[in-house]
Length: 181
Image (cartoon, rainbow, N blue to C red; front, side, top):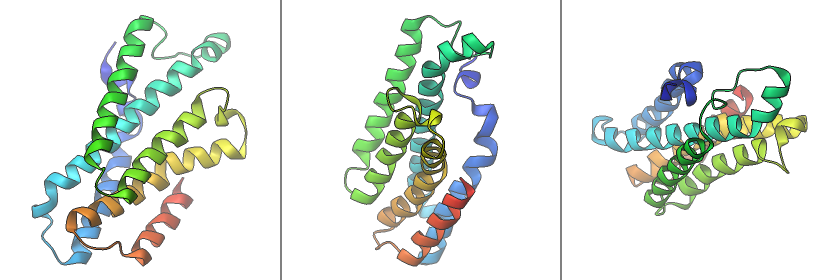
């Protein structure tokens, strides 16, 4: 089975990542600094979000396996050896921990990164499994998929620019991202 199918890259990455990157670019442009000088930092933030998305795909499919089997729904991980499923999950968590460690200098960026992981863990993993609890699941998905990653780009880019967060911009991005979710 292809790794790109397991991590669901074909389902959403093409349309979700460019707007996130645009938020980083817009934050740099507002500062009056060169986008090119911060390309590496923006790439790091984007890769960090991708690693989180891989975790989300894996943990969601792992926790849905029995329900998917009972309902006849295809699950990307069902034919994979349990040891390989857990290895992929541990690799994604290890890479996510490395990204979090790299963000340790900025409490806002780190908090938003960890909030995404927490949101999707609560969304998928029993006994919380918010995806089965109506509005709680909608909120967890909206925050984990849209709100926290968008705000992470603004906060992380501001940190790399060595400038305070523009709270009006941060709030505007937050409202739009939440409504998108």
